[in-house]
Length: 145
Image (cartoon, rainbow, N blue to C red; front, side):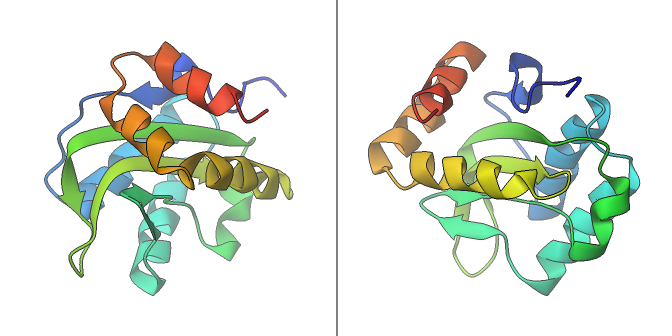
């Protein structure tokens, strides 16, 4: 694999976004910028959000493409966007951490598993929301591996 799944370059800290759509576009844009997906993947992420919310609870959303977005995925990758002030994902759900996922073949299942382990701990969510550096974010996720 040419890219690591999550690197410092895939992480944005202290971000402010005006809407759920802006948040998803930013998250997907990082995946495009780093070469994991083609630009069309972002529209599939927005389509997925219209079908069913990617809000997972605990201030976390995991935007990703629809089943038919697979041709737009070049390789597996994750983008991470920290929004300390939060963004409204509808129904009173505030998101402070967006984790964009692009999975090649079925690699995204392992990625999701690791994210679920990290995000199931409230303490980890607090650390991720207050992290001041990409290194802090990476260290929290590396503890799982």
